[in-house]
Image 1: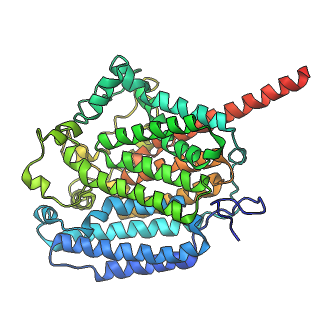
Image 2 (image 1 turned 180 degrees about the vertical axis):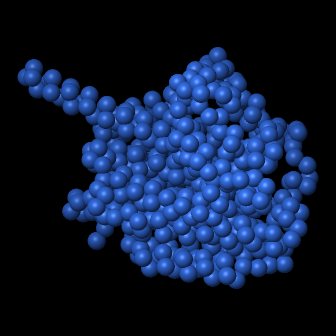
Image 3 (image 1 turned 30 degrees about the horizontal axis):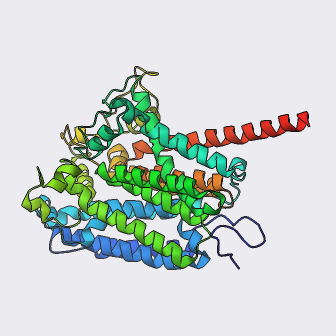
Length: 479
């Protein structure tokens, strides 16, 4: 019998690592196959809606079997990846999308892209079963940190996350907040395409992604902290969520919310009803962000609220919209390999080179050979194709199958190596890794960069733990 606290058994033994169930995977694969086989519709958006409903129902049915092993089994990295990908590709088509029909006038034109996306879901589902139980969790995630150490990491992450922003506005917090609410590409701390030494500070700002999961742990284990400390952490979390909302970038606010929720659920002793309330609030915020951010991200939240430079009435009438990534995938399938050869090894080369600062590697590739914007000749815009489109550009159908299976393997490998809910530090490492999972669904080239905040948390945690051990040893010697 599992205790009310998610993640800890009454006997004190650690919870078994969540595992995908074979039955759930078979149900998902059968549903995806039936959806692909029966795919059709009178319009392009109708075809996409067929795929969205079929894929969504298949996922829901598979979750029924996953949930039989406990709620904690639903917070696996592979399921986070699958639902992030569903959000990016299909979620918007659960709502009317007349503009999509203007972009794709013939329903047959969207069939290949829907089917290859369904194949990617199947690849992740299969890949997660390729990790055996002989992979044991890292020892360092088992040891916990003191509440003081967790607060230290929280405030270090908060300070480093905003340092470059404050530096860019001469440490004027009012100006910083004003720029939050302005057009997203007009901020003083924007990064140039080719980073210099100053770009390292921009990358350090990624420490901000540790703030939500740390806040989730601290608020979930609130009995170990004073009321003033909890209040300050809550205010810092709300400020960070406000910043994430102001960016107009759904993957940022989505990453903040998902990592916070996962950390809070594992750290909290709250009842299931209370956890459900928190989860409902989180997903309501995500839904509102998805709806509104697309409307103000180019003009800025302040202008949007004041009615200045707002989108046209036609844009305002648009229903819930994510990014039409499905359209981008279809466009790439029409270009490769008919007009342009697959990029091949340039894709893994950029994946490796991406996190290395240019100041340390002046001859680093610029990523133009794998850039979706370059391929579609849309310079000056930010175009996302999800990892499905990027892997198709790299190697066609084989590239999609290989990449999706690898995503499943890496996701379950992360769960097996980092899952340690009995330790606050383990929750931090495991939960913060969800940022990398979510952002990789949008672009696989962000994976080596997105995991850096988690690696920084590992270093900070081990340093603080070692310092505590050394201090105890010194005190023991002087007794």
